[in-house]
Length: 630
Ligand code: ADP
Image (cartoon, rainbow, N blue to C red; front, side, top):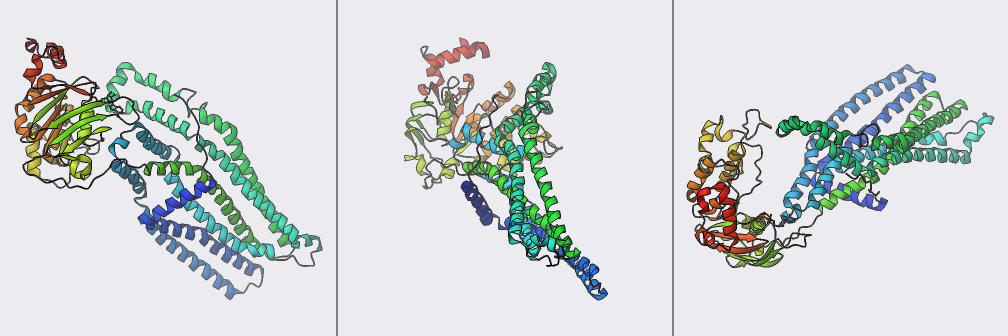
């Protein structure tokens, strides 16, 4: 697999506008998160200065007039302010913890909600899925994206307050004058010298974080490589952890084969891998240079403050205050520059999330109400419908005309790739036709309220999803539900006997993944539950895509024997590869290469020896049911 590192740094303008948008979004949606972070940073960065100031005053008093009354007062103020600071700090922490308890959930839900709001046709695109997966990999790999942004926001606020507090307590270091008696040290009073010192300090403060950001940028700019490494390791490295792979892993020793892919010496994270090379090379160099420069700065500060104190500009107490606050000031400034640089590095990841959240929907959503009809008189018609998947040159459906008569049982058959599933996706408006129109009771389905239109259909897809939930909630797709109805749907779907055996009946969890008392269901049992869910919804249309593929012949026969009872007066559309199971339908549509090439009852179609249906029927019957070849 190719490793490429084509990530670009955002411009500063873009960094500030994306950051402002994110802060604005948080401010409108969850102001508590923002306020609590602001308070925590303010408190955490300014309160240490109270200690520095009071200690300096005590040392100054001890080295000066040593007034016991004043000393006692200063000690009492120190102790009580320390107690007050820590108590208030604890209250702020509490506020912060409450406001931020669901912060990770908030960020993750934002992406989940977007996926749910997205038109299915956009969600279904490979590009969309890759986009989401890359966002998650960025977060899991280097914490890049929103999490890093808010982490940096906290730090930058703290840096800023630390910096301001440091400036307030350091100004007099530069303004206090060495007495005229210290002739040799008079240069310390020179404004030119002070400017020079300030310039050198600022230059060093700026250079150190720039070097450290340079080191860090190698990881961000190579996030694609990092993500690919994580994906390879995440796939190959954990194959043996999953039950469903355990037998094959042992039989074919796939562990040895897979380990080669997840850990060969050219790979991303090994000792001779990609990131190791970076760490030994430029990353290591810039990180070391940054630390060296920062140590030099601390030394220079000590020399400057000590020289001024030695020359008599201030006492020993002020010296401790200056050294502590100037070091905090330089740390604050240095950290602010580092974090601002990081913000810029992280920005392309945040922007990438916004690109995802901003993906526009394309489907027209009408507002017409779908008439509620107890008699289920809903008729859908495909009128000269053609369809191409986005980005595809090939038509998946071509000039399809078809009316779904109320209460009809319609089978859809045809070879793989002939357009059966696409036909159903258009019927349920997961996609809109490229050409032609689909009508519900004479009106274009695009004019109807989308959710109301969707509610007309109960589906059992081939790759249905049953979350780890209690059985009854899965059937009803709801937490509060009609237990009797759920039971009767399960019985109709052939799950009655199994339901009797379940330890907690409808409250039994499907799978043991999250609940040790849960029950792992076989493929056939899961298919019956999916069928029961479609029955519970009780929509006028029921669409079944290979609903018995995972059932054993007995269970399949049982379901077919009561299909009429199951389907009742609904309009049913039934997709199957097993032609023998379509015989119960009123009519069969035969798809080939996106066209409906034949339609009619089983008897008529099988009598047409030139037709596709005849060919499919005989190809299958000789293996499946020898009697029917006759
Ligand atoms: P069937 O259900 O009969 O097996 P489909 O309706 O799934 O066939 O597919 C019809 C055609 O559309 C096939 O050529 C298939 O490759 C193509 N196709 C299906 N899904 C997509 C998709 N999401 N994007 C692009 N092409 C697709």
